[in-house]
Length: 121
Length: 108
Image 1 (cartoon, rainbow over the protein chains, first blue to last red):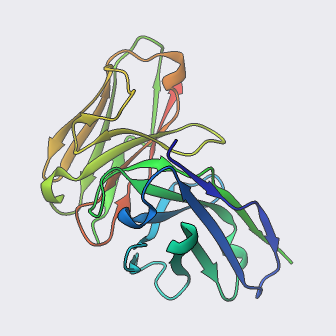
Image 2: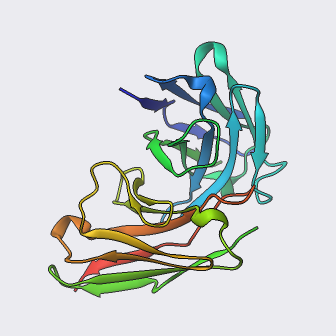
């Protein structure tokens, strides 16, 4: 079964760092892009960026460039989203998702279960 | 960056009625790389339509997508109780992919 399994919920303080993960299984991890999507409480979906684990080619939304880092470790089929200094406004659900087709732009047909990040003093 | 504007913000309909949701892009979407997703509370989004008009695996045929260029439509021919949810469009035809702000389909 193709699936993406994300790491568990996090509660952090402003200024702390954080790295959340998304592990792919049931498919060739290096052959598909993996994207990250933010959903703030009660709000819509926001595309943050995407990485191709095969060669670590990464693209960011201008809204998130410089605010987060997307990476991947193909040896353990895991993608990451990290912050060096969290803000209260980073409080949100974060989803990873995989496009339908290999190595090209396509709709996201596989989604992780989401990781809730809460940043509060 | 392509901005997607969905309308209406909320659609109040009864089961059995037809729902028509709109997604307008600020510039032409390359190769009709436009998808529609459904999201229910507490769940991850689910892909309904890709390539503007192709249904994803397992999606009932009451869901249909149409359009090209800058104007796209998701139609639900007869609303079932499980169809009341929030729907998002997304374009993946440019280097920066974007989502619309969503349309909530609620029970009237």
